[in-house]
Length: 277
Image (cartoon, rainbow, N blue to C red; front, side):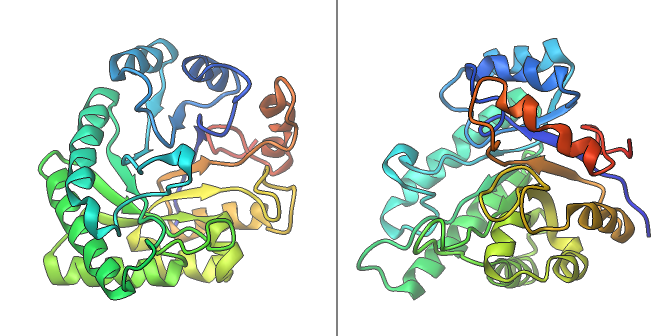
C-alpha cells in the first residue's frame, strides 16, 4: 500500500501576525495550495471564498461552531441543555462549507459541564453526532470528531484517541453513519496515549484528517520529541491520501514568525504540497 498526502495551512494558528483574510495570500506565497481553519464565522463566507479563488486554493476543513471560544468553551456537543444551539450550528456550518467548497467539518465534543452525569453527556454527544452526520450526509459532507488532550483542556469530554475511535466505530456500525470519522491530531494523541504509528495504521479507515504540531510546546514539527520524518513516511507507507493540517503555533512570535519557522518542511524532506523536496 502506498499513499500520498498534502499539507494544509491552518490559518487560525499560522500567519497570525496579519488579518485573517490576508493569511490566504501569505499561505500561497509559502507554497500551500490547501488551507483550513478552526472557525470562519467572523467573516462573510463570500469574502473568504473570494480569497480562495484569488489564490487558487482549496479549503479542506473547518469546525462546527463551538460555543463561546473566547470564554473558554471548546464545543457544546456533549451539553444536554444546548441541543438547539448545536443543531443551529450544524446548519450554519453547512452554509459556510457549501460556499467555501469544504467537504468535511470537525466537531468538538466540549468540556463536561458541571453537575452533568458523564453518561448523560455521552448520550447527548452520540445523539448530536448522529444528527450532524445524517444532516451533513444529505449535502455530501463528512463529519469528523476530534479527541483533545485533557492536559491542555481539563475535563474535555472526548479526551483520548481510543475513546474517539471506539465511539465512531460503534456509531457507524449501529446507525450506518459511513460519513462519520475521526480527526487525528498527532499533538493531542502524543500527550495522551502515544503509540502514534500503530494507532494510525490500525485506525486508518476511520481517519478523515490528520493534524500536526510537536510536543512539548505545540510548535513546528522538529521542535520537540516527535519523529515527524518517520511519521510522514509512515503515512505514505500505510496509504493515507488525505491532508495533513499544520495546526501549530510558530515558536517565533514576531512578525513573519510563521515564515521563519517553515524551514522545518525542507528539513523534513518535504514541501508545502507534501511532496519530497
